[in-house]
Image (cartoon, rainbow, N blue to C red; front, side, top):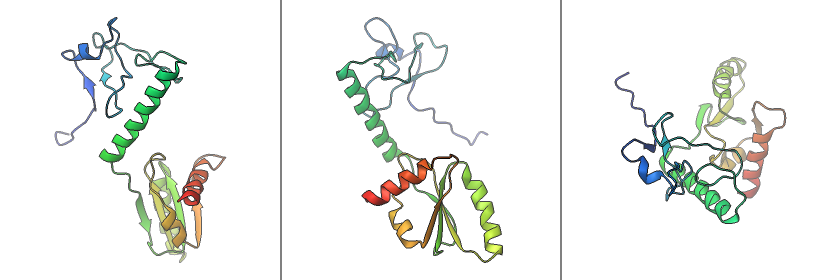
Length: 174
């Protein structure tokens, strides 16, 4: 385990928490930053207590309907996505025959089952290319891969085909 390095991101510690407090001494867990990533306090840390809501919120995590605050938070989240695009590898993983006529696209936990299914399909002489997308957003443009396939199947774990809709939207707008 000594070889494992854990990057916990933008952590605040007791020494620098003061720079993330507002004038009343409240921790700004959703502070607007240049890269869009807000600092995180470890639970139980002095002055790091905060509350967050799933609704639009201010820098303290309190619900707000203020138009300017809404714009600041939306812009911050967009910067966070751009920062992630720059720092992370968003490439898909691929299994099977790269030149197969049949393409299966999926994401997340389906990857293992699809990799195993390839073995059975190959035994039956069915060539399949599997593309596993690591994240729904941001995701790679698969337009060229879909164009090259005769048949495309999207495997996902919901009843409504939401991921297939996103993939179809990407292809239509590419």
